[in-house]
Amino acid sequence: MPSTPHIEKHFTSSDTVRDIVIGMADGLTVPFALAAGLSGAVDATRVVIAAGLAEVAAGSIAMGLGGYLAARTDAEHYASEKAREERETNEVPEVEAAEVAEIFRGYGLAPETVTAVVDAIRSDRTKWVDFMMRFELGLEEPDPRRASRSAITIASSYIAGGLIPLAPYFFLPNAREGLAVSTAVTLLALLVFGYVKGRFTTDRPVRSAWQTVTVGGLAAAAAFVIAKLVA
Amino acid sequence: MPSTPHIEKHFTSSDTVRDIVIGMADGLTVPFALAAGLSGAVDATRVVIAAGLAEVAAGSIAMGLGGYLAARTDAEHYASEKAREERETNEVPEVEAAEVAEIFRGYGLAPETVTAVVDAIRSDRTKWVDFMMRFELGLEEPDPRRASRSAITIASSYIAGGLIPLAPYFFLPNAREGLAVSTAVTLLALLVFGYVKGRFTTDRPVRSAWQTVTVGGLAAAAAFVIAKLVA
Image 1 (spheres, chains in turn brown, red):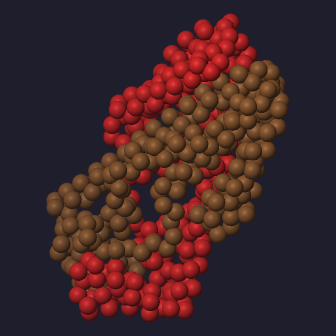
Image 2 (image 1 turned 90 degrees about the vertical axis):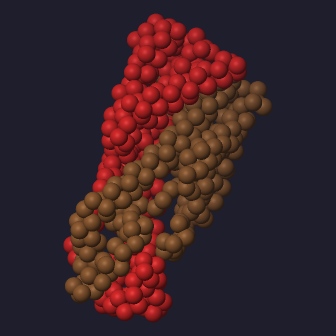
Image 3 (image 1 turned 180 degrees about the vertical axis):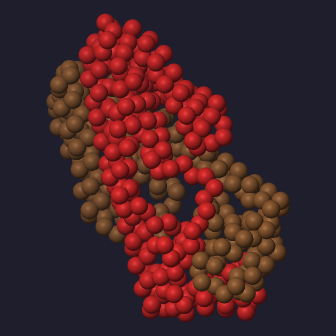
């Protein structure tokens, strides 16, 4: 809609960066923690690998399709709210105009200015509906291709993240050695990932790096203790 | 801030509902899929239970702490953008006033109305900053207690969801019987969860129910095939 006003954004990490972060944060953490937990409880590397890969398959599908459905629900929510605003500006224009007036009265505009603003906005129905969507409801129009792109990005990031902690178990003779190398490799990967994520989403990348490592470490420690107690 | 204008919301599911959905959707799906996958590959119920519980521990910590950090990043992002708007309305008020004018010119207001609106908004610095945050950047002030509440809600929902598919393995003599009962119980739980979620977030609960079951079923099938191939 080129006719609607452009709104400047200071900084928001792009949707793709957000999806990569979502997928990779869990992908690096949960398969690592599960494999670490199991390798303290069972000797067979084969079982650790089977469980790790099964987790990566399940997690990437659950998160990817979950992201797909969430994006589609957002798009449908936007469309249904927009249809509702279109209906209301048509059927009860005075009520909707009063809602616009209410917003501006709250900012201390004089009554005659409020009237002038409301009259200008309601003179063009497309812009009026756009105004209600953006300023009354705070909703931005979602990109229609977002759902499937989001699903693929989240799922591939989960798989890419999940294969890093599992790789050492493929190449090393037993689960104990696999665990040692997997821990070293994964903590390093979490450090790098946390730092890069922090560069994109905050202005404190170093703090983000050690936070990411702490989450991964805590998850792995909890999984290790529980698997050891049970098995 | 009671002085800032009230903005009506049509319908947004509350943050708590959103957190329960996030935690439980993955909690019901991934431990179920992992246990199903492993019980097709190893005979020992003990290993299935150990892996399942390790996954629940890792997943709930990763998702709960992930939610905590995400909420804190949101709050910090809001605070830093607000500080920036406060600085800019102080140091370069004409630039910021021009940005307000730009928004309203886009809605077809006459120049003298634009001037009146801009003058009214900039006459009160608190409201001016509030206007920029809400209408220029589209940011709402986050609840400061949100981060820790979000972490606890997501983690407990993940644990609650994850224990449902694992419970049958505790009580049944072998992994094969565990798998059969776990599958029946979990698909039923996914159906109910999807329906209730759909009632909260869309107006099509039945579609939401079968979508949730499909995601869980696909994740479990993928985990089953992969674990069988590897182990």
